[in-house]
Image (cartoon, rainbow, N blue to C red):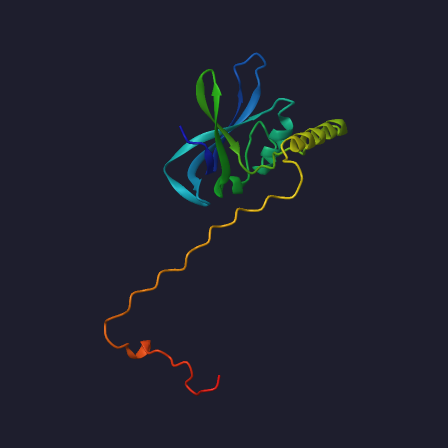
Length: 188
């Protein structure tokens, strides 16, 4: 099982399929040969290429997302003989792997990483926004200390001056350690 993350792969095959469910959901399986993994903002070649598929469902609810994914791959528009752009087949596509739980088992879920699939945000009604604003302000007020002059920081303890060094009994000072006379007669 591949770990969750961002990968790069070449589109190598596609096939229409039908799920074995009550609705007989139609889907297009697009298979990629995964060759690289993103690590620390760089592509690292995998020790061995693996093939994984992205499932694109054809239900009415999924159609807007599927259509955008197909457009991102340069789909030819022919479900009888599906094909994709040469760029998608030769340059490589960025994919995302996530893990999902179902029936007590963990499965890989593969998706196109850069397909423009994020839907436009739908803001909540004004009443909800006003309610959320009031809630935020109430919570903030409940957790804010009362206003007033801030307390002064504690006064540091006085520090005693360093102890005097014992006299140097190593002989006369070296030339660069010669004491400078208080008044050497040179104006400053």
